[in-house]
Image 1 (cartoon, rainbow, N blue to C red):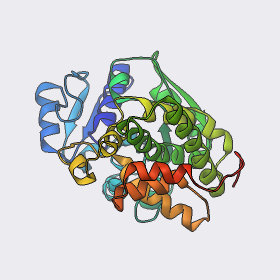
Image 2: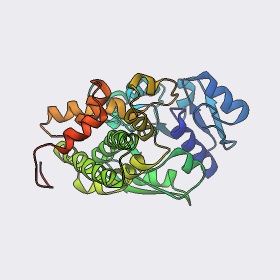
Image 3: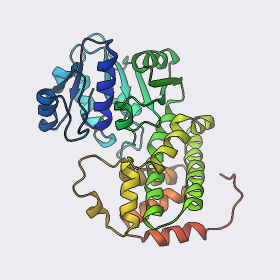
Image 4: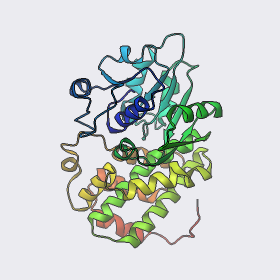
Length: 331
């Protein structure tokens, strides 16, 4: 498990409890994470008060962590995937591990998805899949019923991921639309920021429902323009994850949005947060992608203006509502 955040830690615990591997190694940059996992079997920094299965071991040496691995889960923040996984790939032997990306964001340099980055930096014959869907780490750790989707270009690889991760409480579906699954997982964070801003402004359910629906429309619009399948955005990775992240109190993006809606500056709202809020960088990347492909993303554009141009959230809402009138389905 490459990445010791809450999600990586919860998945490491899931795999260790499933018991199909001799052990699960959790690599993290933070020495305090490695120390607390090995000494107390708890990740106090990112998943506190959650004792881990005895089969989880912390490791601070990346080369040692990947050596001999059958399955390697890429769980680093999206902006760090290129650097971290390039180093991890140097530790591969002749046998290629199954690499599963669970990062939800976009590479800020190339405006590409994490799996594209992995294909750039890992040996060419490495099997790569992605795992995404509505899945708060804390609820997966608590073994609450959860459903996600595994996607790979080769359906057999996606089915292998199904077998690796599926348990009685963690159901994995398979798919081949890797691009759609990853774009949905990244862009929903931007809409979740907007949903939080609405809550911070004191707006109600009408506004939230409109935002989620139109947010899904613009996520789909960009995805289809890039070659993704429209149906993907109506599934677990699209609608499912968007609903969760835009409404759930455990959503880091939603919580940050609330603070912004209440008037807190971005720098102040981000200060002291141990975990990365992926939607911040993704908002900028989404707007750049939209310009590159001549796709209109009005919500993402307004979120980026609030984040980076100090636009007042209330003004962003007003500008969205006063845009030129359009049919519901448009390109």
